[in-house]
Length: 351
Image (tube, rainbow, N blue to C red; front, side):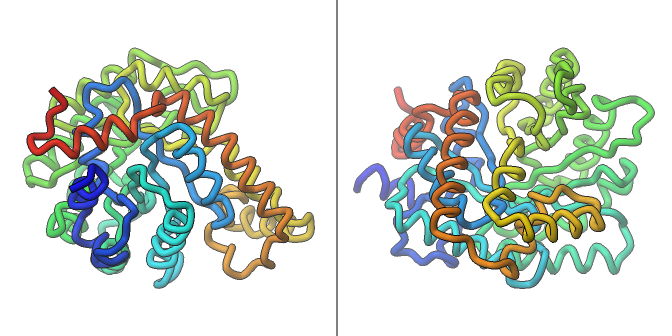
């Protein structure tokens, strides 16, 4: 059995059910990648897919860097078919390119705004669709809730993930009087008491002081968050990373962060692929919705005019360049080969 065959055997059941047992694309749970790269000084890169035309560039960057890669669907519940279309698009692009480096697919973060039964029931129904579509990681944004509400919500929503043993990411409430570290500790302690397994604790770069261009990362605060999460066996992810050049991402790695969601310029560069009249339309709708225009593309793309061949080539090239920089800054170069060699060992040991 080849290394790839052994790695393919680790794909979650929901992934195999979606893409078929004959697929040669190693779509994994990030749990396996954390295990394989535990001693490697790097953070798992997770990049947003805001338009399907960017996929060849993002995947090409992972092959050029021999890197593991996460791809995020920012709004998987935009409509009932969104999760399945996303997974199918990623899988088709990977198959066409002969992509055999490990990938993981992230849904969200999904914003949880209330613990009302109707809200949670609708979200749980959406999570079942996400799981059935083939996602191995779901991120829940709990920032609008109190600590008590956050624990209640996650406990109510985690069923589809616990049943399939898939990965869960949670963000802490923002209203804690004790600050970020206290909010993280309270959330993780509450979830551990309810035996809700959490893979990642997600904090934003804004919470760490680095949300604006020129602002400095509060490294000491980040290290305290990492230490707090590690005490519960949870890895830290930094989300909403958009400010500054890719080179600054290495600071997160040095502080012990294990996953970084790099938004950065992907929104603006994706939006520029469409002609001015389309950009203006998307910008107006984004302003009304209170969200970045580039991010809204992931919701509106199906209804927009198709990109011209030249625009698709430009989008692919720009996505490749930006992704390559991010992968290098996060220490992901050669992480694919290292992970696959580890995972192919019967005892999971390179020694």
